[in-house]
Length: 275
Image (cartoon, rainbow, N blue to C red; front, top):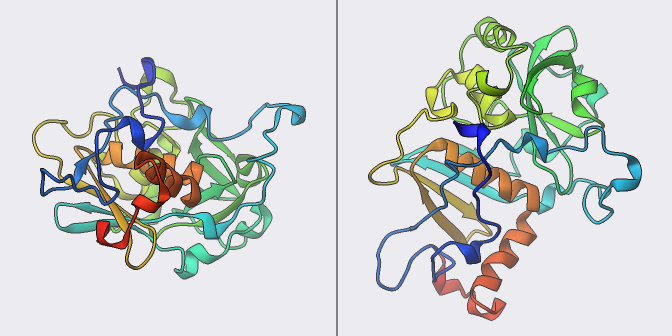
């Protein structure tokens, strides 16, 4: 199932029922429910410009330098436990590096995130000897780190998820064991889900790893400032990751504008509407 069917996803917050940018409706006292990505393909086909001729670049996005200040901070909660935090002021998030520089920083078992303006982040597992294993275009591949980066800048992101990591040798073995898997043999929606599964071994990162019924146990809290945030609820970690990656792709400014457009005017977003 999973990546064999057409995408079904929202293009903006206006397409998901809600009336308040903080995720609280007047007639309800709980966060609004986020979109489910149960019918979405993986986003690897969109997350880079593999094999795209230079003349076909989008000048307003891909050719812009990556701007860490346009990253949207967020936190993911499973019930009351924080399982993920993206803090752009954290030491590992402040700087990005060229692929060549990353080679001197990576250790086997590290998670590497390649980033570029207007594109989905691409994740990989460093397995040693300048090699990474990653999910790219519906196949698990073993490539040189510089080749997998496709010219993007990157950083080590071991600290984003708060799960306990497996031993480095286990992480590397899990990644290498999957090399060559493709199409219907894949169990991960995107490169982040695959890389995180290798490091933490949790079934929640796999397609269908959680049953989408009943109350939404996951909350995605988008942090616009110290006083302004927006909360979404999801039934699975997989859905949270898909929404988080969409926000990573379009950037903080675009997400803010989506929320403003949903209320018809930026003036409708007031401090008292937020946490």
